[in-house]
Amino acid sequence: MHPATGSARLYLRLVSYAYPHRLIFLWSLLGMVALGATEWVLPAFLRYLVDHEFGSDRSLHFLFIPLVMMTLLALRGALGYVSSVGVASVAQHVMMDLRAQMFRNLLALPTRFFDQRAAGELLSRFAFDVAQVAQAATHCVTVVVKDTVLMLALIAYMLYMNWRLALFLLVMGPPIALLIARVSARLRASSRRLQNTMGEVTIVAEEAIGGHRDVKVFGGEQYEAARFQRAINNARKLQMKVIGTAAATDPVLQVIIALSLGLMMAFALREAAAGALSRGEFVSFVAATAMLLAPVRRMTSVNEYIQRGLAAAESIFALIDEAPEASGSGVLPAQVRGEICFEGVTLAYDERIVLEDINLTIRAGESVALVGPSGGGKTSLVNLVPRFYVPQTGRILIDGHTLDDLNLTSLRAAIAYVGQHVVLFNDTVQNNIAYGALREHSGQQIEAAADAAFVSEFVRSLPEGFDTLIGDDGLRLSGGQRQRLAIARALLKDAPILILDEATSALDAQSERRIQQALGVLRQGRTCLIVAHRLSTIEACDRIVVIEQGRIVEEGTHAALLERGGAYARLHSLQRERGDLALAEGVA
Ligand code: ADP
Ligand code: MG
Image 1: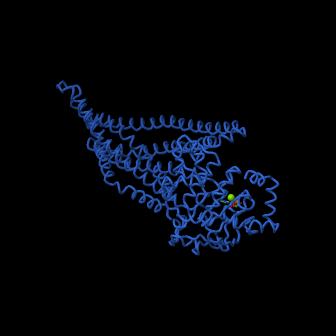
Image 2: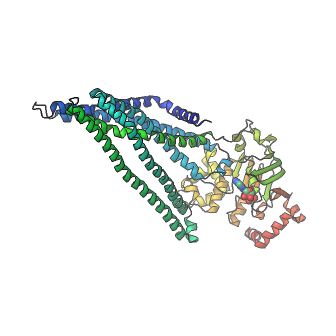
Image 3: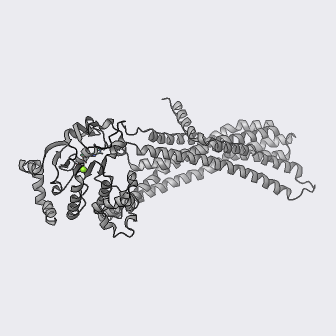
């Protein structure tokens, strides 16, 4: 795409976000125009005072001047207020709409998208890029509208007073504007680099805060302190550069300004000598020229703001346009039986194959355990059922419906899931169990699920029972308690398909046994896919499937597999040696 048309399209798209707020926008534009169009009144008033009142003994009421000045500035203040608040209101609305749209789409993105990106990068789009766009747009609109009108009005007034002098200024103006642009661009370039070093400071601090336990245990204090020192030292050096450049820039700008003002004054004095300029006009010209400098300076930075804003807008729209998960239109019947069928399924994460030619049929109501060495592909296999990932080849069917044809909401409504990494929300125990679509369940149902997952027993000891806030990601709970909460959530969902991925790994042998008993009851009438680490917990499953390096190497009942003396028997005797089984059985 041609860069210009690309920018134009981005620009139009941004404008479309402001369109619903066009009325407020129009009002603030009017305010800006009025503000810009009245700036010349101040030098005009000065001219009047010098030419008509200065040194005259006419008894002008001494309150007249302060009153006029006050009224003028109060009026302009009101206009300024209307236009700033109006523009800000539009900008804030646009920011809100952009963020809402980004977030909506974020929720619909496939798991792969999140695998490929750091959370911090996405967060910065929400915070930084959106603010950047709003700031750039506000700045540009203000400058382009207000400053243009202001400069035109001032120049027109100067032309009216003395066109030769005004023309002289117009000829001198562009090269001076160019000089100012050059000098200030250098300043901005170094301040942009500063932003990056501040990013480094935050990253180091964030890591130290998040990993404070590991820092303590592994003695990372020195290392972290040194890393932080380097980051803040870099930030300080750059900041000094920015301040140094700014401090040097200002005098240079002053010299340029002095030169231009001086030239203008010399020319003006010649005009005055020729009788073409009154004292008041002289003063007025000097004031008007000085008043032109600020808008000229702002004008020279507009392009840079536009570029920065467009770059930020590009990254925002990239997130909004990111394709959501493909969802079919098929809907599962109200009564899902829960037969799951893998047919020649191969899965690869970025080129690396992790599941190869998986053929497996799980009958409705059957409990199947997946075992095998870690990294073998168990999690990858069960993640295919809620369609977190789409296999490269082969297909998966539920009750004969291909997953690709199913509506994702309908598919996922049929599945309860406890993942390997339990995720809890910073909310109450109750709301963590009755999360999302489960909100509608009654208090009794929630308590029943909590009882079955042995959540109730530890909730009773919490200060506010089910209404206790559990902290960011359940920070205030133990690993086992977290897992029990997640299990309660899955039980409450009461779905025909239940997936437990090492869902009891953090429990002590006793609690695990008890939960297994509870699950034993629950397994009836639903299809279960259970990934378990401790083999003792899956002996009662209808079938055990052993997965090694992405392939099914064995399947059968516990007894049959032991008999066979293959991979499962080896795993079993390994755990017996380590005492895992003995421990679990001893407690039971
Ligand atoms: P298991 O659950 O049996 O321990 P996994 O299914 O989690 O095994 O992992 C199988 C393989 O796939 C491992 O080698 C792991 O490194 C890789 N893997 C798992 N998840 C991802 C992912 N999101 N992106 C890339 N590779 C992954
Ligand atoms: Mg796993």
